Image (cartoon, rainbow, N blue to C red; front, side, top):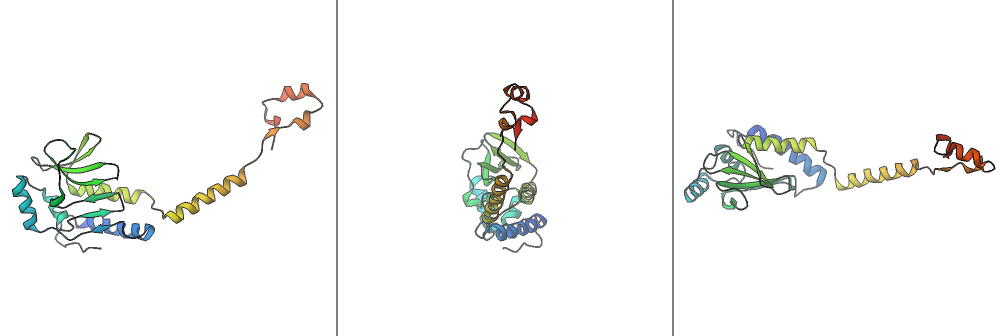
Length: 195
């Protein structure tokens, strides 16, 4: 895992995220998380000049930590300036990554520098990139992360328990076999069924 620069304003969020990624890899195997080398100041300035837009400072702080990353499989992916794009989002937005693995993207506004989540055409404003990281941390902290092996083990135990609890229910015709009037009288009542 990458080291967090001491002067990074996202230090607290990044450290928590790295801790959760380490746990995720322990529970689910490696290759679900990676954090590439940071982006240089020169690369950020070049992108801003070419695109006549400013990368928000809180995202620059992230880029000083990692230029491209994947977090907990499909939980989140973020890119460096060479992979930013503006496809499939409202005009004026720049896509910097994806979250939740369901097509939701995180963008920043070229004009205002605010962050925006876009999902199925609906946009939601976010204060800064620290808030984005806090949402990812909450997602990772809230959901129990099970290995495939543990998940299958739990499913098997549930199946076995259901089998043990399964009881055959049939009408108590034996108790009333010589008395059809009594059988009809008790139909639908608790004592009509035998276990």
